[in-house]
Length: 169
Image 1 (cartoon, rainbow, N blue to C red):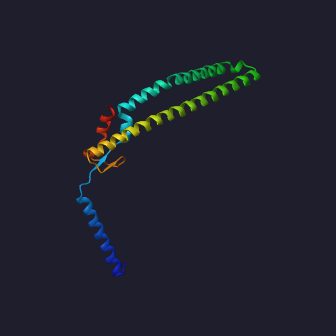
Image 2 (cartoon, rainbow, N blue to C red):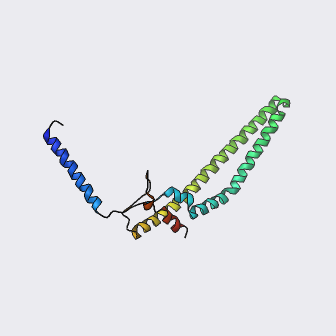
Image 3 (cartoon, rainbow, N blue to C red):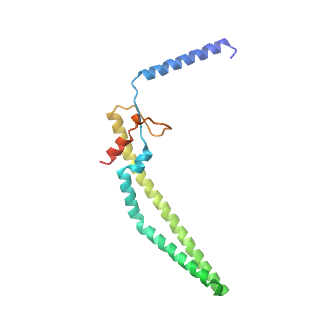
């Protein structure tokens, strides 16, 4: 920056920025914070949805556990019988075990995908409800901006407890 006009230009730009920042600070600007993850973890509707999903998937989980138990039983029986089996019988049982294992893995993958999708659906619905409540609180308390992710939050501006309370009604 050997050029004096550049130095003056940078000084004026810095001064203008400082003046603009001071003007924003002089206005009454209200900020709040909302912890969405806490709502998904702690809210009454989230707990109700979780138990509803658990109940909804309990039969499928039991069926999956039964398939796994049958596979383990068949595998233990195969290991016990293997030394005395003919080559053809050993190969046939190995194919059966491989098919049972593939069937179990396929059913388990489908179960996990369906469960994850169902949880996602409930989380989206709860998130939408929570955001409506956040907007209502922001309007009622004349909050200018509500942040959801932050590295640090002063508990004084955290409205998560208010959202949790409103969701439980």
